[in-house]
Length: 137
DNA sequence: GCCAACGTTGGC
DNA sequence: GCCAACGTTGGC
Image (tube, rainbow, N blue to C red; front, top):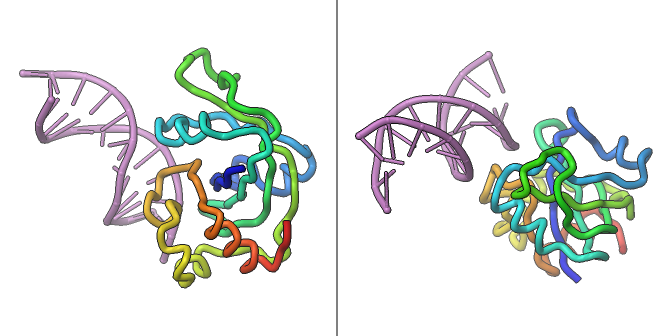
């Protein structure tokens, strides 16, 4: 079991929409490093959902329900997509501000690599975020 | 809206 | 294969 964090721009697709849809195809990734992370995702992996630009907080948890397949939004075989399903909403959103002040989370790619939209999260980081969000799996 | 960071492209 | 130019992301 692995943990991940994905960024969504709420202007394009936000958590509220995700809750309505129950599941979504996570496509449109056009960054090699993010693509490589997508390729490593396994069914059942846990994915934290972060809102960039507006909100700037982790709002919920999704579960990977379909491993990587060809990105349906392009013919280009280089790009991949996965399917995410609603799992749980965080009781409290964990904001970027809070993340920055948390010692354990200083190595999160979110803080180090601004442009990466899909990144791995370690177990300890994941658990820290959950407890900051006052949420249990 | 600005700008820093950084990934990508293309000329050489 | 280097590197300058350019485009995009995302925090402020």
